[in-house]
Length: 133
Image (cartoon, rainbow, N blue to C red; front, side, top):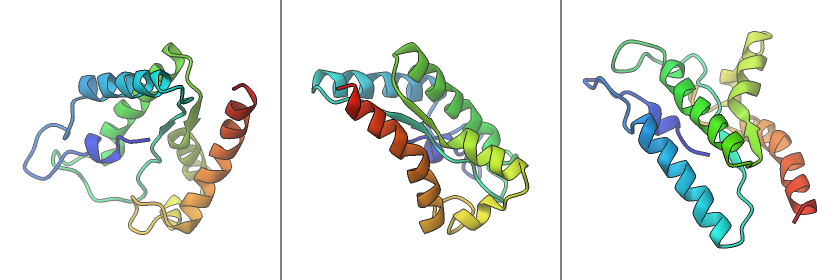
């Protein structure tokens, strides 16, 4: 799971720290190297931001983060890799009225509750991956 920092657009910049094309290529390379080492990869989308400050182009950082999450979803589907979609889950919880910011230390980085939420989504996927090895 990565992409939160890579997708962020810093103040004074007009593009994310890493292009979505490079992010996608990196994910494919990571999966390939893990498989070469006989490791079963599991991809995860990063959780969305809570009530976070606007980024360098004055938009909510979830706007650019979604592009990275979507690439992660596509790579997982194309390469038949298990996916834990934290982004989708956190978005659904936010839309249902839960303050996902309370799952973070700063509206971005998960706190113990945020990590608990992620572990609950990850555990069944890891258990299933272990069964199929």
